[in-house]
Image 1 (tube, one colour):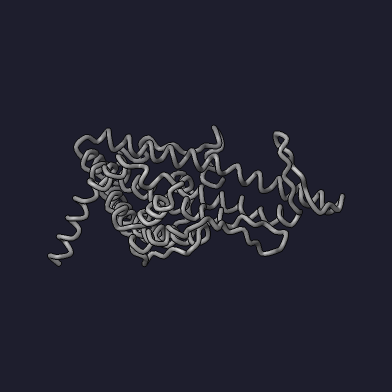
Image 2 (image 1 turned 45 degrees about the vertical axis):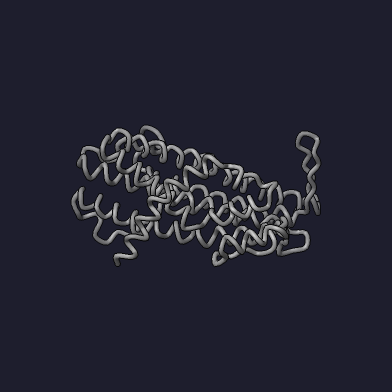
Length: 297
């Protein structure tokens, strides 16, 4: 137990150094024209070092927020505004999906077309009807992946309530804090570790693995090359399935970010009491006279 505690403290201390070094030497991990720089970016993107950098940022924000609560409220408002902004923008993908489906049915059933050509700004883009049909799944994935934290802020996520509704305000906030620290954030960390390498295994060769040490990966850098996944389920079907892997990462990142925002909001509402419930919360409304339908859209 003592060795584990020392290891944690050492990594927390090293996290500040690693953060400063990464910020002051961006070319070591952002200059992708250098294959070793790309490999460092991949390795550190799901590493222990990166985890402790995030933990250090979380600890600094938490301590600063406890010393000056308006700062923590500001963090909550910024993170929730980001969730709402991304979600409200991504929600339009649902309308695009519906419109695209109508166009596909209309052109295929009436005109018997086998392909569709688009020419935005004079750049011709031609794909088969099958390609457009299969790409509908991408719009659905955009809604699911990018609207997750937006749905949480709006209170429209699915909940299973056994004891929560009957307890006091502070008991609810304690449950919320426990849930964010021991369920939301650990899930996001584990999902990120797996999905990060799942994405890169479909973008470059030779394949990289979470078990690879940095030295081994840097040796691979000599032969690494881009090999973006373009294989579809049908010969002329949708062939950009790597975008789904990107959306998985975006989904996990939004869950992680909102897990922090939810913990801070719960902590502040616990400290300040019931009068602070839903303070600064930006939720969509259907307008005056539609209160009975709130939460059903």
